Image (tube, rainbow, N blue to C red):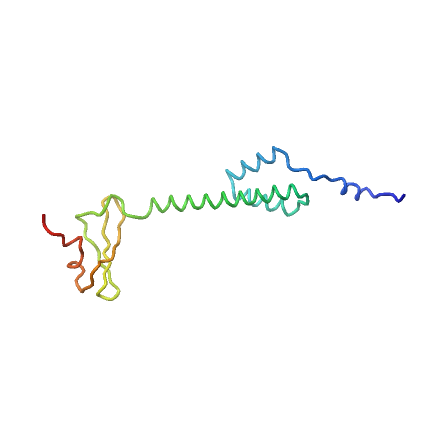
Length: 142
């Protein structure tokens, strides 16, 4: 019987042992608090891993970290948009509108708002005098 080399024996007996619960807990915590770092770590570890169960874990970890990272970006964009843009408090009845036109016939009115911001709306009719066409400026007297 031929002798078996120690390196072949060690490779043959390597089991497909998954990561322990400590690794899972660490992965979850890192993903929640530092998703970009978690994504990089998962991808780097995946590159040098050969065991199928660990490869699956690292793939899932990378996907979860990437998804959480994108979710954080979306929440930040929505929060920024709600703070920065839009009309707050409704159109200011005493504010002067600004009229713009690219052709001198079709107009867009921009109205200031009570608590900041502004809102723009196209004037439904066409003509050369936007103030006379603006339905918010020419309301019938009550």
